[in-house]
Image (tube, rainbow, N blue to C red; front, side, top):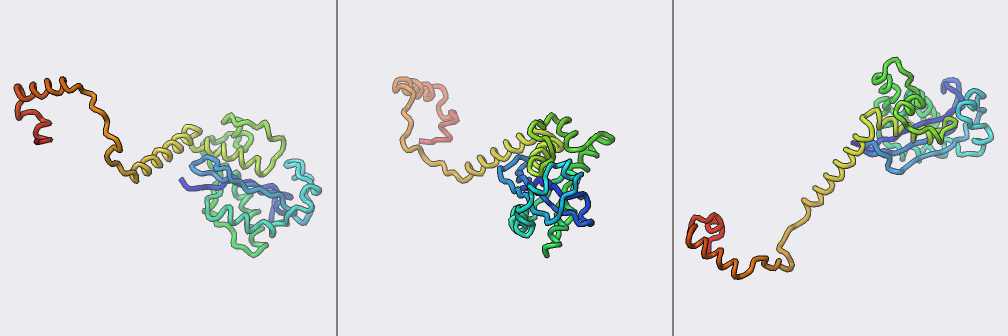
Length: 234
């Protein structure tokens, strides 16, 4: 599988069309469904006030983001990090709407719809009629929420990476992919390894008297019918 980016955002409100802005973005890079260790995370000064209802959800206050980098300061680094890789998000239309609004405000091309994969849509298809929020899925898959009191972009991206793995088959599939990659790498290395004669031949393990007795047996009973005689003619 290709490298993918698991992404989450926090915002000043729920609708970018009403002037609401990003205040946090967190990204986790995964390869074959497993985190690579590379992350991208910034708090962003939205240059406007955060709605009280939004603060109650994520706990990010106006004081916390005041003086943080503006989106214009991080846009190039963000685009370099995500590139054209698939973007995994829970309720992807929400995150895509804010990301693309910010990109367009700063003269950049929006991300195409086909670049995004919505884990909420995946969960609804797998568990129709059930609660499929990120919290509900973590509880269903026994993913710990111990470090999460409020929403946070990087924490939620980490949780979503685990949920995404489970939605695609769980840890067993991740380990199988990891093992398959290791086997393929070993095979590739073996294909480029030359095998020549031993630098020092092994010592014979048969006693000379035993070798002589064997030769006499072959000459007396098998003669030229011995298979190794035709394969290794004298």
